[in-house]
Amino acid sequence: MIPPMTILITAGPTREAIDPVRFLTNKSSGKMGYAIAKSAADQGHRVILISGPTNLNVPDLVDYIPVESTQEMYDAVEHWIKKADIAIFAAAVADYQPANISEQKIKKDAETITLKLVKTPDILGSAKQKFGYQGVLIGFAAETENLEMNAREKLKRKGCDLIVANDVSRKDIGFDTNQNEILLISVDYIERPPKASKQHLSHIILEHAVELAAPRDMD
Ligand code: CTP
Image (cartoon, helix red, strand yellow):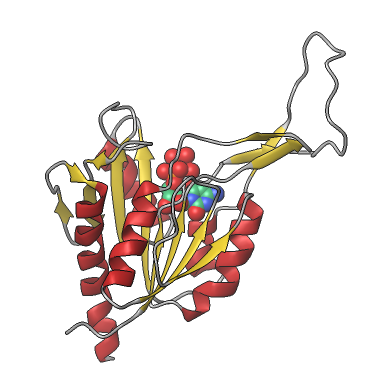
């Protein structure tokens, strides 16, 4: 029997407001993160799901924390991660946000307008380095080229124990589909499970997460 653990999961896209009625976002449906949340809750773990806006039903028995912007997701993760044994960052976080949010709806006066964007905070990269998190840290890598090399670089740069990498240039897998094909990369190993449903892959990801957490529990 695996002892129940506390698992924090980020999921879905984030939304960066431009004005009161417009925002920047991406194609993430949240399906992968929600599938992991469901598998973890079904196995009796405590799940904290911090999610951007999606059309999905929140799985039963999950502590659900809805957020919109990257900053809100950052603040929620900073608050909750202290309680986690495992943290899985499946959210497709916006990399940039508008430098200024217009208080009023932007009017269509000018022929062209320029939107100045500034970097959002890196939530995954802050987990160990800023929040002092010491549990198992799992990130995702959405890549359109050099999948393995880019994923390895992210593993190191963000201090992760495991990276779940997928090729988002393929139409049959990844963003907004039910299927996925992933690479699991840790410092010690690489695994290529066959293409499968996100629900099935969520079990595999969870198995790896729990196994990575096991030696720490013995300390
Ligand atoms: N991530 C995060 N906060 C950000 C950006 C990304 O927590 N501001 C997390 C994602 O949830 C994912 C991982 O970092 O687990 C990698 O996200 P990805 O978009 O692939 O990488 P980036 O860090 O954004 O780098 P790049 O876009 O340059 O590949």
